[in-house]
Image 1 (cartoon, rainbow, N blue to C red):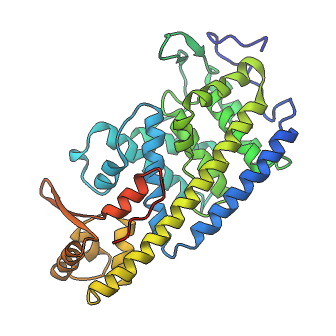
Image 2 (cartoon, rainbow, N blue to C red; image 1 turned 60 degrees about the horizontal axis):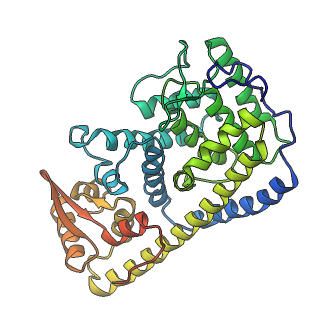
Image 3 (tube, rainbow, N blue to C red; image 1 turned 120 degrees about the horizontal axis):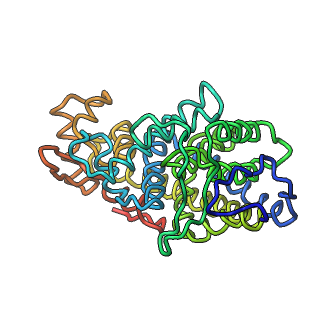
Length: 368
């Protein structure tokens, strides 16, 4: 664009809605498929009787992947292991990814009392970073290409300008109802990243806001759209298409990219949830047959809610007293449902089949 210089603060970042046609024929066609995939995901998720299974697991995968995009590398397995552990035992990358999961969950809970706003963004970013974040006040923020070291983007500068653009962003989210919600999501995500309101954590905050937006609009009941998986697989495209809006005014390619991401991710997550249901059914029947005295619906739910289970988790859930809880978990180990391990002084009971299903690209369920 004529007035865009990557080395100068982009204070001329246009307000929303974009001045060009964003709902082109290609975009509207892609919207139909993406909306259908999201609707199927919502319906499939509602068929899981205990929603905590999804809330406690799929967002962990999102936290790992979204953090990896920012080169904060840990594993989903480590996140499940340390999700309820004291901070002292956790490496820095895992700790930061866990904060992402907390930010997603607290953002989700906040929607029950207020809609998505710039205040939501501030709270989400503060939780991710583990310190109170505020809108940037000092200049000097630039985005630099890792390989070449050249400046590829300088976001707007000046607190008043940032607040003006965020207020416009917030208004667009809630008032631009003439656009399909998924088109609005693509536009709002670009604009948030272009405003770049914080000194750090903007990418992860923006990706959480995407999921919260879908929940806020009722397109999803719970935050289980695992979009960061797609972005990791198409990381260069993600950044290229974002950049082409500022440099070329190319909104269509970006929106089509995001609609593809939503469609493919929703389909993949739906398949994953179906596989989880299948594994739950297989596990239930297997425990009923081999250890009928141990079979307890709440206990089986718990090992799917917490694939790294502790005796205290069983006690706290009101399923059994400590000795009985320990016996239950050991019997599930004897029949191969769980596997006992020690981490420091902590005794953990791992659910290997469930963890493998969660972390694998495929949706294959391994029978007992």
